[in-house]
Length: 232
Image (cartoon, rainbow, N blue to C red; front, side, top):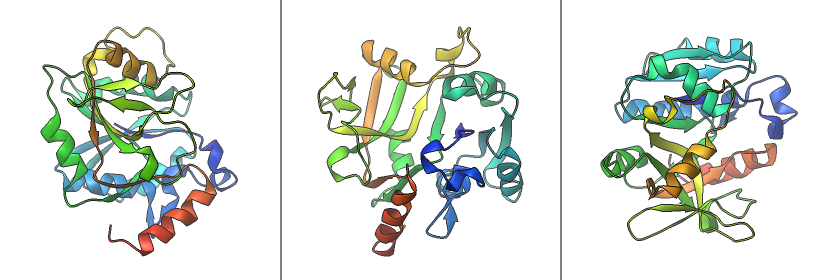
């Protein structure tokens, strides 16, 4: 499930004319960085929700054949990430699936981080598995972090007014049955993470590489400079 429907408000004025997923980093659209990695990891199908500048995203993705793209159209109403998943459940199926924000961008380490997520996934003890990055070594992190992690990889939500060492990278694996009883049409995804954490069933894999938060126009320049010194 690739989230490409957002308004990209922090990226304005760029996103007044182009959707955030099509902003280019290193000569490639953000959404293609994500989809190329999923294709390389063996993912055959990606459900992509669209709303803001939906026609541009649809036209861009029509040129791809790996992974196969299924559009989940939210042009009439933006459903937020939780609502977007609920709408797309018929396409996503009954098995656990990847989550991906289209600004989930990182410089890869020696091994595919998606492969590491798959290797770590254990449905017997996990409802959600997130790829998390160390806040101190990530680029563009301007908040107090998201989670702490114990020796087994179990995540706990950052306490109010405390600093947490890890940030959510925008990529993870989740069980579709978590949304089976959702009644609302528009709702957030984060509460599902927090509920899993309360139940001891939210886990994390530490990203191997460098994570970049592409949240503002200024972050694009930082990313370009880092890419110039790295090999994606």
